[in-house]
Length: 358
Image 1 (cartoon, rainbow, N blue to C red):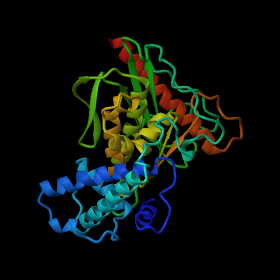
Image 2: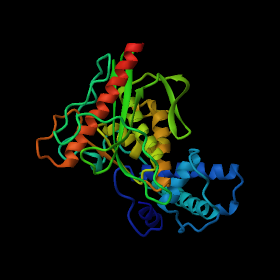
Image 3: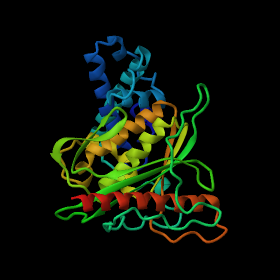
Image 4: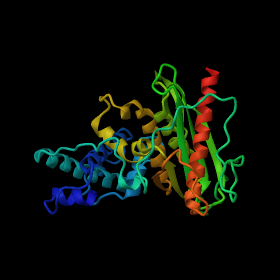
């Protein structure tokens, strides 16, 4: 997309194609402005603003810059800053050309997942149903005879030996809320980190908890409840916190590759696609996206840090609340159902515990 933009502003090709392409380029321009401001504040070499516009940064340098401005990594070197500044100039030209042609950047529709995020069979099912208060967590639905019915007690994943690649992981996440949208909602989240490709499942660690009625922020590599303003718990906030928890535990485990599986197309899109477009638009619009911008921004910082560390991260949208796959189904289908079901049970139990303690 960046190469297409360079060709376009040079008159050597058509405008960048695809839903929200101009919006994503504009959002990246916002990130690079933040990089430029931070570089100036830290009195890094001014020569970074004079590099030729065709010497563009790599994807890893862009990810590193995102982590840096989020406080999750070291600053880029002078040469990388020069390339980032050059890309900023290209994106300025893109913005001017788009405005001159009357097609200024338009963010992609915020509730339309990309093709890679849609289920292979049909769209995502309805949101997680309201949790029913219970005295204790409910055990996950029975798995096939070849697999355990519930996750074993998971110890934190041991970091890889020095020089050895970290584990390839898959994380299942979910959120739940009782009284969603009402006067006294109680929500929870769940995340289960497993070794990729293992069936029966090999659980590395799992995490769950209640959604606090306040804003969240990123601190010490974790998304934590912060100071006011108060924010009502909701199913969407639980879904987003589930993804944030998965990213955090994968980072702790030193994962070399991570697939995040969620039944929420909204939460996947927020973290993996739409956050840059919302940054470009600003935060003044009253939309569901901006109501949860605190968690979205924190999770996006974790995602950038993972990528900077060399972890390949992908997102997969699955169908939630489905019956078990038939006997003889591929292990991948059995693992997806098992993991989604367990993450749901963890989230429902956390929401129920929050309701019973209120």
